[in-house]
Image (cartoon, rainbow, N blue to C red; front, top):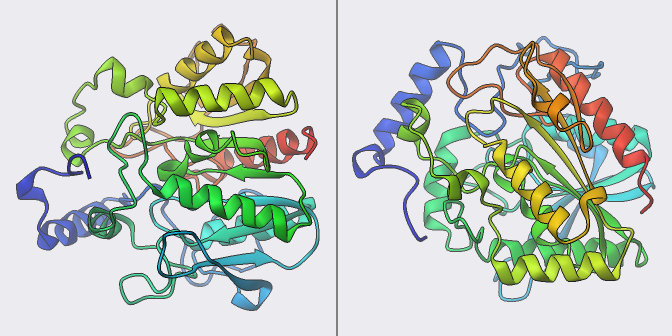
Length: 349
């Protein structure tokens, strides 16, 4: 990778264990899903806004594999069983965690067939990819995997081409149907990066957290450069390819979900994206759904392209961050999921 996630003295395994232990003790889980989960006694029948800690029975999914050019091992993919409009759902840094799997089953009830690839393979660090939820320890895995470059401002690494291959495969599996691609935190900007794929009609950007912050940037609230705050994690060449694809296909749409005061992912990226789309003549192709604190003017000042609401979550070191994936606050999660349901339902694909 171009640079490291963490300073040298923070790279030792003992540091990861210490941080995870300390932060867990004060109610903070270090991961891009950033959620405090209920006990094992929680029912596995999801209710609106409920956050679940145990994965659903794996039999509720079909496990498939997709071969990717240039990648030695096939990528494992779990797919919901019912027919419906095809969706490729990309996991956050902590993998195919329980919350994401339950959301896929919820989306199945909305009328979608959801494909969930494990971009880390299977197994991951000796554990099954299904229900994997290891938080900060995955950073060590990503540092060793040359496909990822989450700290660069102009790329997320070769993993993007792998995701594009998976999108084409999903479309073929669905008889050539167009698909929606949903990202989440670490993968939040990937759907934009592959919107130039003919098979991709809808790109859903969930609190995009690349280029990623280093731990000390988060802990000490170190101000980031304008370039990093506004970066879309794609090159100018890739941006032109996306613009060209949108110009050729008037049905392509972008949907975004975010928090105004997200400590891990700058809201400035949505402003940057909206501005650049406007300059290309596509301002009406992007709609964002954003929660902010009481009295925050962000949504009102951008009412032409932002639907806003008030968050129920109080700010902490890593929160609020996750939106529809596994929001810390059940009320926020319910709001984001309802907006996801409505916004996907309003787009033809």
